Image 1: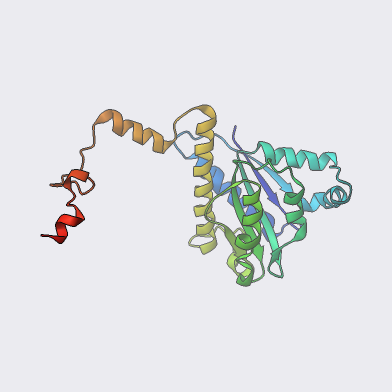
Image 2 (image 1 turned 120 degrees about the vertical axis):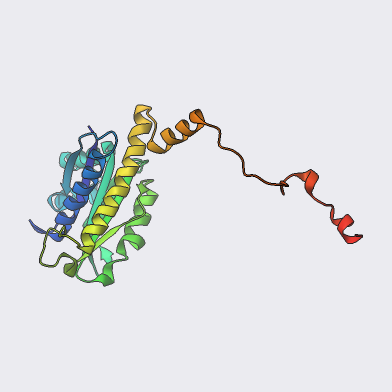
Length: 234
């Protein structure tokens, strides 16, 4: 059963950061489960707020507490990772980046990763690209192109962010579909099955030969090229 792990730093019980992580996980799971294979997806949530003491302890001692080791193991076994951080003064909160600074360098290698951030205003919207994307790329995660930023005003009256026609809902759906596509490729590679793109290519090759373009002269054929010296004397 494919597992999506969310790593979020929600600083309150019902923070916008936790809500965004859950919406992204839900959109991704829905996209995976409605695909051609449609496997059921399990979502594991990690809130770094509950691991603050353990993260600080490992930073100064180098030793990971059992709860932190369990979180690292969840990230390492995940088929996909969603990470969402609150942004203060233009940067993701340090507790969030500390988790990825302490995790094993190979833990994210080859894992599809979707980034989300939250903040008070749109001034913080580039924090995902300038801070989190380089960090997660360094850890060899496979980052999806779309990151999702949610400002306070983006939620509006609908605190779920999933209201009909909501711009935030559209971004969440698009990013979730991208992550689901990356997951599909990863799962197909693990099981030895063909991805949808590979299946289409195989069907085209088996069904019929695609005719070459009709050209009077192939401009790449050396025999069809007039020597430069001959052009000078013509």
